[in-house]
Amino acid sequence: MKINYAVVGVFVLSAVSLFSVGLFLIGNRQKAFVHHVDFFTKLNNVNGISPGSKVRVSGFEAGQVTGVEIPDRPSDKFRLKLHVDSKLHRLIRSDSFVTVESDGLVGDKFLLIHEGTDQEHEVATGTTLPAKEPIELAAVIEKMTGLMDRANTAIGDITTKADNTLDAITSTVNNTNAIVTGIRSGKGMAGMLLTDQQTATAAKDAVGNARQAAANLNQVTVQGKQVMADLQSRDLFGKAESTLNNAKEASRQLSQTSEQVSLTLTDALGPDRSGENAGQNIRETLSNVNLATANMADDTEALKHEFFFRGFFKKRGYYSVKDLTPDQYRSNPYFNSQRNRRTWLNAADAFGKDSNGTEVLSAAGEREIDQLIGAAKDSAVNQPIIVEGYSSQASAADEMVTSRSRSLIVAHYLEKHFHLSAKNIGVIPLNATAPPSSGKDSWDGACIVLVAHAK
Image (cartoon, helix red, strand yellow):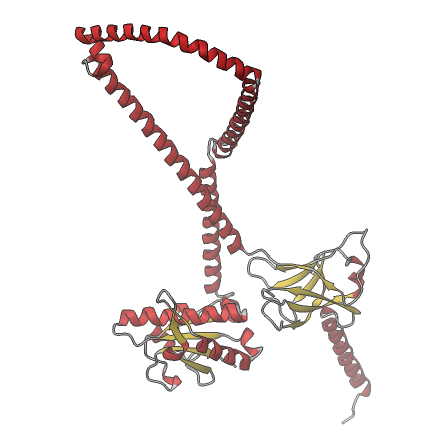
């Protein structure tokens, strides 16, 4: 059989060429053949950023995150290493900063380096760029809720004061009507003068006595004039008048300030161009925010169950054990696997009571959890964790309440003390019955399960 070496040579050259072109395209896509420079930045919360996440400069694909250094203390920040195309180095100036952004509503997170201004100098390689922490929607809603509560309190105080003032006016009018009615019926001194002749005569005698007293008073007046002359010689009246003028000026300024405050409150709480007052506008705004949040939650929930996105959300960890009943959890092969690492916390040692009688995590329980997470090291940061709660109370209802409370206490300690992501921690109350694979028929306390990744 004769071999056509020319055909074989063409085939080999074609294969090598295709392999080279494919290797070049893949390397170019990953910017493997581009010269890079390294920068650093620090964040309190990496917020979904991990090694391999994209880095963009002014929206342009510039590189990726090549490393994340875990802080030694909770008060320190994560240190991220950014691998950036050197062609974009000239856009990064001393006033540039880094923010965490996302592609769309549920897209991947990436770091965006904002370009600097022409007046600032170009930063050197290895510089740590400042970062701005992202604003969470939950914090905005919490601030709006606080503002609404304060507005409702102010409106309630104004309404209460207005009601009290109206009640006082009504009471005064009623008292006045009662006095006039009493006078007309002859009650009191004024009524007696109008209706009783004997009382009127006695009143005339009293007037005569008053005239005699007035004559005596004239003598006293002469003496008073002498005293007044002495006071005028000392200018006591001038000093008193000056003091009175100062008091009047202070009263006038206080009145103006009160009017300005009243006008400001009237303008702030009064109706706008559409006839809506401040309370109505705030309530309508919060209602729109709640509606938008509910719509967003419904849209995300629909995406979770859609055929094309179901695998994506399941891989990202958007399904939690709260959708499972205790019986389903005990029989689930994923959570019932022998490869899952379990740490048991006894209720007598790990839990105690505070001054109010509420069950809390004891110092011994905190040390036991610290040893577990310390032994797991970095694997516990991204590894799913399930906190199982157990209770051996007398009734089933008390068992469920106590076991759920214990699982939440341990989960909150993991989130706060080790800054673990809440989406990676699930809680499940199991009363007193443990899963079959745990090796225990019943338990009183809690159990931390480090769930092994599915192979």
